[in-house]
Length: 226
Image (cartoon, rainbow, N blue to C red; front, top):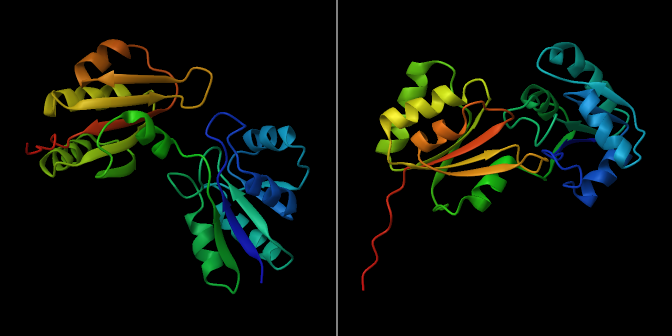
């Protein structure tokens, strides 16, 4: 019985990896990577020379049988380009396939842009919902934002530089008073943390670049008795 390790990798800074993750990468007979070029940079830094093959949404059908064969020989590690596989990244199909066998699926936790953003937001963090990437269709996006506002729940989501302006515009139209914390390029050289409302964000991010993690605070301040 072998183990498929769902292994978290750094979201930017290559030093943000656990000692356990490094050991498992060294012990795995093969490493399945969403982007082999990105993963090779990490492996080179820690002098890991194990075999690496590509695994992504486009080649999963042909790769899953291959990886199941590798599991018959020993443990393997699945990594995404950054962060944790199957969290807005490829991996769920392989996990389902392995779960139907006698082999084990085991998480190797690590860096996360979601928890990193929550940790520095300074906003109430006892009630929030992470939705992955914001829907592309305006109607679905509007429905989701209205639901979060009406349910008094803070929303955490990823956004690309190509759609962040449209999302901020919609937030400004639906909930102009909401507090936002916008984290851009977390742990990377151009890391930036913005705090303010959607209107201020639109004035600031006129030429957005990089990946965004956005927190929209919809929770009302707690009233304490004296």
